[in-house]
Figure (cartoon, rainbow, N blue to C red):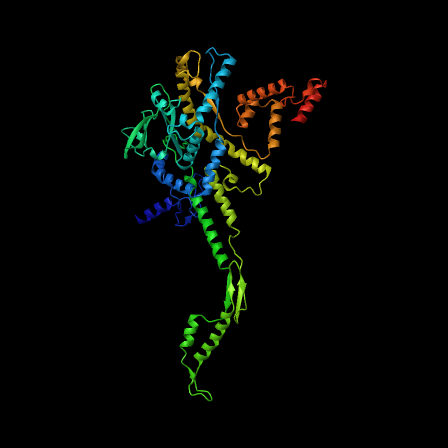
Length: 549
């Protein structure tokens, strides 16, 4: 029985026992998780759980730790500002794209409607009293807050509200549509399968969010109130944006969660290096002396060997007294000299057998910069910015390396713009335009009934952010000109690449061109005014255009 158990254990452990009793090496097998002799895979515990359960368990701890690190680190605060600058710049520019087909609009009428929407939206979005329920922030500022929340909490939350005409008269404002940004910590962590509630979000049987349970204070009492996600007509009332990892995710988690360890290790590395350098700097001067220490004086005092009295002396001669007199003389001589290491350094004559050495600091060591760079790269990747944007270190950077760095991070920036920054703007824009048309401030053919029946078509819009960073503006402009000349792009695409609205650029150029012509001045928008009178061949014209580009 015991022998069979041994054979069974050998088979489990991968050893094959021959009939003679000798052990053969295990047979090679292919498959996942094949470990090494050091067993590094088997020693790493990896329990498999639903991702949204992991988020629910770690959310509050991760959010608190992220806020603490951001509030006490200029490095992370600067990274948050860099995320905002890369994603939205000054603001996200509205570019309405209404589908007016079948509604009786001519091209001129459609352009006029778009101009009216842009003009009124600009005034609304940049007026805190008009767009913010609290009346404190402009829409660009609220989007900045949403991006900071996305970095710290992994999500952003906003609630739409509507002020009645009486309330608007009280505040002296025009628009009733308002956006109120709500800190994600106010979205409760409650979970109840009976209600369809998971981490503060109530779902219907199909898994769609129908309400959000938010914690508020009323007269000093904390209450929980449910806010519906949509009203009866389908207008969005709550905007909740986050970057999911799994199809079942309900809430987001801090983008710093995967980089907590690296940031704390970097702080410890820097703190330890600085403290070591300070200590080495303070104690860089070493005084070497053969003068005995306290123990040596005690040993001399304890000496009891006395010699006979010398000639003419009644008391015996003590070795302790002799040594004491000698060292007292040495110390008296040292007291007359002075060693001062301060803002006014001074070195006088030293005592006998004393030597002063000035040491140089040995910190940081050669391994400091490589380790610091590696930790910084890991953090920059988790946040979604470049290594140079996080550390402001651009040494050894070339045009090619900077271009590749910008090219690799730019899709991350545009994705963050579309997934995190644009949805709150779009939700507010749809509700605002609904009110503008409903109250007659913006005229639509057929009135509000036609607008309500085609709301999704008429409220569609694009949101443009800042231009893609360039390592060499001249080379970028030359590449843009070459693409336009070859017909592989359009002016709209090139304007979008620069973060500009193509319609606004066209209208501005048209106005300025007409102004120059009416004044009898050469227009700067005509590349070669003499080209119309120059009778050159087609090949020469192509060559000249290439040279101009």
